[in-house]
Length: 623
Image (cartoon, rainbow, N blue to C red; front, side):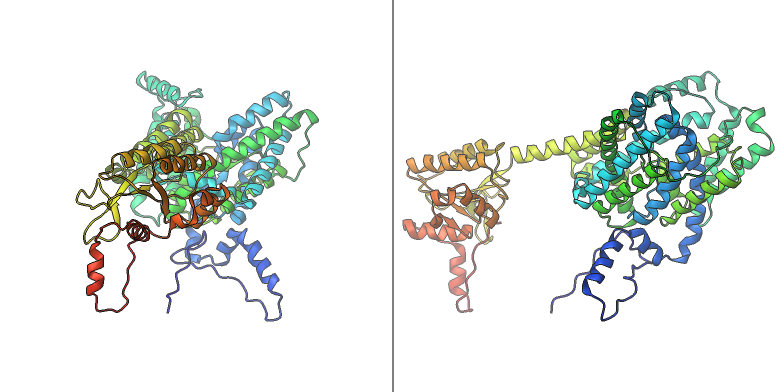
């Protein structure tokens, strides 16, 4: 009896958690109702998580949500300003995505919200179209979010999430290492209390170091950041203790009691704006439509690329299997809701996600706690975090960034696959030098080029028979392999397409020219060939004519059915002849030996004659 295979883990599975299917439908319920329920539940993975939520996670998510709040507020305000809209809208763009992703998001670890990778694109549209009108800028940003949301939802429903398959493990390692270093360097000015205005990471870091050596660092800020960092590192071995909350809370209390923001010049968060987002349709003019559409599509592409890398990275750490199409739909739902609630385009956050994970986050409830906390602060206590020192936030980010670095597995990759290690390094340096999306794009481009090179210049082999080894093998690897007189067995280890068709012909003719005996038949061992295009088909037809003029028959073995269908469409099947296509290489050899009465003894023939099992036969598969 066949064993039942275990089901793959889903985005809501965990070692201590199962996903119930919900109440069983009654016997008289229509079958399509059950399918419909399963369908809509598929698009709400957060709901499934909360239905089977372990209470043991609650305290972790509550603490992580409070820690996350201290990051969300300054980041939201800062990214709003960078995107060209008033600061309070950055808080709106932090509250809404967290709540929506809690239902539609498949990855328990991701934190959604404003992100630096989108700020420049949003700002470009707003500067060109708003004319300095703040309300018009808000409407433009909201409309871009809606366009981005529609594109992502449509892409997810159309199953375009497969593009994430281009993001290999080395690329993800390079991305995360680049983000970790970028985050670490970007927090130096805050930690040292040095105001630096620069758009470039290297310039900002260089300026910070120069001013530090010149004695411009704020001693109190350095002390606060160092103590907070030391607390975080010391408590890291005790996961049940909310280290980040202790560090941030203690630093805020100390700064407030001693008024270090005023007396010692420590940079603090300051008072927050107040008010909650209200539903509002972003109305734009006819002149804005094209720029908003183009900007929204560009934002969608960048946001999904950024989110997919981060999602796959943390899914691997948590042992989850994330549906990239669901991730795309979740990102789209987040942007749609944000656009209708006075926000602007958002993405996953490579800076706040690791902070939440490091603080102990177990599920999307962390984001819900963060969103509710911001809302409560805006309504009831907008001055509560006034004295929160920026140096403490910098220490939390740096401590989280350190956890993101991956070195151990990269050393293994360096040993076993050198070019993939350098691919990871290219992604790493690309992220640090040019930005997250540019770095990913560079690494993917290199990976695609490498893949194309392997297909453009693939391995091929002339095959021979090795005594007491099943199959037919590369004669360069098995020098003692015996070759059938007058027969060339040629294997091509790649699809046949326009870029390698000429090389295929040249290698075939070279194999014929260097055969030890006059060649009467050529067998193409085509098991590795997965497709043939028009250019390659024409080359095969020309090759068949060339060989026929030299009185050499062209035959094929182990052609896959889909490839055989392609050859039939191209007319090659009829041109070469159905009798020249064999199921296995061994079958083609036997047919050749019988047709040309070649003296050939196979080592298996003797074993079969001596076999005590009547009728025993064993074809020789390609190896």
